[in-house]
Image (cartoon, rainbow, N blue to C red; front, top):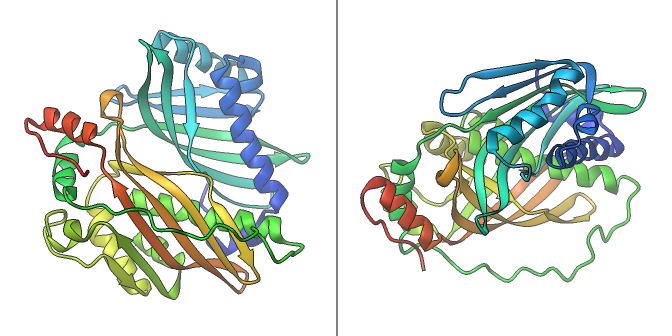
Length: 351
């Protein structure tokens, strides 16, 4: 299914549609993790198709219809030799029109209480086509692509460049009442803001759509990063010095084209539920995040943590990012040790 444009997505789906689609994601995830085969399969249409792209060259497995889709639960448990797994889904990007929708999100698979600790098994990207029949959303097609990267060399260089970077999270006033200006369309506006944030993360990490990422900003939008001066200005990350401040769509697109499109999406930004405040045509969204190495097994580790603060403006019904501020907090030392072992040298970490 061809993804809808931002404007089409805004006018086509209601606030209730967004809520119901998110509820479908929650229902399918919880039922799968609980081993409820029939409840899991009921999230799909009778003639649905589910495709799983395995990591480490394991190929593609395709399942047709609810009966075959039910078997995925048993196959997953047998493959991991455990009946206790959890799937963690990041803020989903939901696009659609009428009775069809497309959902993309990151997924992290982990096993709790394994040898006394939580073990992350793999990360993946889910891409699903949905249809609404008689007011109910169901999966028509689902694709789970398990990440298969070896990012140790890239991560080692990045962590080395991050040494000495980092800043404290600034004080942000959270005392105001969210949605302090009461509007009849606040629920829909909140959903549209969430989708702008989801698109920001997805397009930034994928590296394949710098123009789409820039289009999420206003014409003179601002992107600024704090705590990465050494990383950017030293030129040790991408080979040439850069400023951590970009103004306007052209600069934002050029920055992302030179950074994120030149590498595989080895790290992913996982965001907490945003705190959104709406006052007329202006909104703010604040959420902490962590960058996670993508892949399987021991590679799936946190790299940095931070906080995003977005200021958005509604123009002709579309919520666009007027200002994006990213505050980098720290790079965990234990990640530096793991990456150092993988690359044959210790690279240090940020205090």
